[in-house]
Figure (cartoon, rainbow, N blue to C red):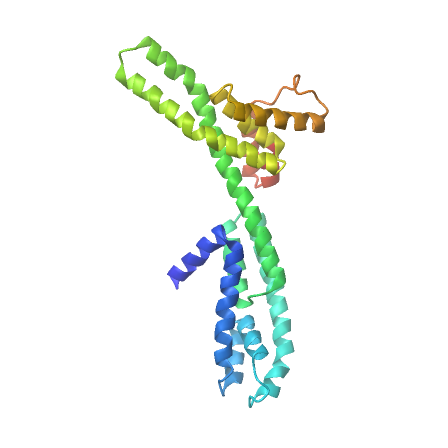
Length: 275
C-alpha cells in the first residue's frame, strides 16, 4: 500500500491526466466481479460506510436485472448519488483551502483520496487538473528563483574571481576556482534562457526580462539572449507605453527582495509578476 501510494504521487506530479485514467480503470475492472455476489446489499452498505461511493455506483450500473436483489439495490442508488455529491463538494472545499494555504502535498492527497472514492467525478477531475497546473507554475517559480539567485551570485563574483587570478597568476587554486566559476556559468545560462522563453510564452514579461537580463550579463553579446530580451522589452514598452531604449528595468536585487516578500505571504501571483 505505501509503495502504490508513492507511485500515485509520482503520477500526480508528472502525469496528472494519466493518474485519472489509472484510477478509473482500476475501479471499473473490479466492479463487474461484485455483481455476482448474492449478498451484494451488505457489501453496498459496507461501501457506503467506507465512503466508497464510486465502487458502489459502478457496481450498481453493471448489475443485471436478473440479480435477486436488483430492485432493492436500485432504490439505494439515488441515496448514494446524494452522498457522493456531498463528498465531492467537501473534498473540493478542503483541497481548495489547503491550496490557498500553499499546502500542496496535503491538497494533492485530498484530491487523490476523493478521486479514489468517486473516480470519474467530473468536478473533481477538472479541479484536480487545474490544481496540477497551478502547482506546476508554483514549482517553476521556485526553480526560477533559484536560477536567479545563482546567476546573481555568479555575476557578482565574476570580477573577484578574475582579479584573484590576475593578482596571483601562479596560484593553481585561484585558476581552478575561475574555471569552476565559468563552468557554472555555462550550466546556468541555458536555464536562464529557458526561464526567459517559458515566461515569455506565459506572458510573464517581467520575469522573462529579469532572466534574460541576467543571461545577457553572464554571457554578453549572445544572440539568443539578446534577441529574446529585445522581444520582451518591446512588448513591455507597448504595455507600459515606454520606449525600449529609454526603459530602465528594475534592479534584480530589488525584484528578488520584493518577490521573496510576496512568496512569504503565499502570494504566488504577485511573486510571479515581480520576478
